[in-house]
Image 1 (cartoon, each protein chain N blue to C red):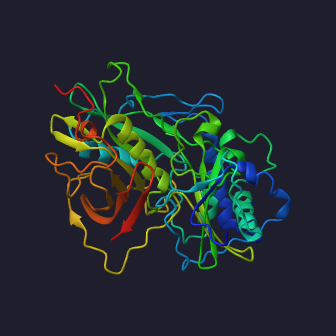
Image 2: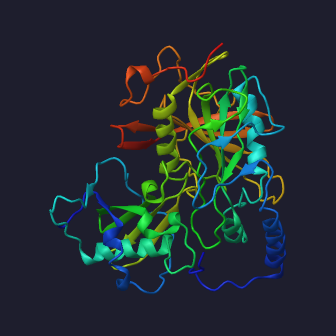
Amino acid sequence: MRCREGAWRPSAGHLAILAALTTGCASTQRIPGVVQGTEGAPLRSIPGPMPAFGPFDTFSDALQAACPLILGKPHATAGRATEQNFQLRWRLSREYCAWLYYTPDRKFEMSMLAVGPLHDESRKRTCGLPSTVDDPRYAPGSLGYVFVLHNHPYDNVLSDLDIRFIVAMAVEHGVTVKTQGGVVPLSIVAFFSLSSSLENPPCDGFFQYIPATGELLRWLRDDNDWGRQVIGRVEWLDDTRYRIVRE
Amino acid sequence: MKRYASLLLGLAAIGCTHAIVGAAVPVEDDRSVRFPEFFEQAPLQVGDAGQPLLLEGAVLRALTLAADDFLPEGRTGLPCTERQASHVFRVIQREGIIFVRIDEDPAACGQEHPGLDSGARYAISRDGRILRRVLDGMEPYTAPVDAGAFEKAELGVSPSFDPQRPAPLPFLGPSDAGAPDAQTP
């Protein structure tokens, strides 16, 4: 990324952070639980399940476990936008994404994580998630697709492409999944941390869009309790046009 | 054509505009600038029908500024998804501001869907200043003054979803509403 916003002179503190961050960079070559396609051969499906993650009886338990796992991956967060080193951390940040899915064994599992490419000069912090999970324990087509999971570097709302992607997945897989515990609507989630911690940033909340209801939700954690707030709705006019109504 | 309600341009147009703006320009962060809805109206598109599309120079300059800022060319070994020619551009002009939305064209890179958070929005003045830039996944949440209260809830559960009465997307047929995707025991 080019620094166009003026000359930046690193302080000793900046250099210490830079050293810590770049040291972390070296370990991103092979990240446990992460698979990555290549430029000429993008992933056609994402393997599952994530080792040592599930299975879970409820999607709520699976979500609660998935959030810190994803935010704990290298450079998944960028700290507070108001902090001095935010731009530096953002340059090194990466986006991870995965499916949370329902199996014929009546359990919720998470796929391995896909990760966006590491291009220091790119402005994009993106993640390409295949539309299907390849879990060799089950027949193709027997899985239920429940949540698209990914991280945002801070307390950032879902983007247009997040919304369009999950709707494309609703067209492909259906807007709901029938599970033992009831019918569950497909949705997309973007986890975030409000902490500036470099290692193991806590899961502080997430944004969620549910195509079956049109709701845009914001979730925040308060100790062990979770609270939700409807922050808007997506109104689809046809299969390509929509408007976002903020509440 | 003084106003463009919404304009979708192929990169064939952008590829010809590089010489207009050569140097980098500063990016302002004017939070008072509000972006329009880019996907509410069907865009006009440069196609093969032969009908000419008129672009003002100020619009062309805004497109070039946004494209060069978000997807700088000239870098070595650019992957397909980093090239300007692998993107589509939407333009809306409103109240003297030219708004540009850039998205991946997945077909250009042999993909089915664009990556999550792979786009960006720009607000550019007619005299060529980038007033605001919002990258996907980087738009901070701003709570409205009259934001509703948080309510405790089971994680990930919708406040209104009724499995007996799913409110599906209007363009999906009845068979897509509430249909199980998995083999339910």
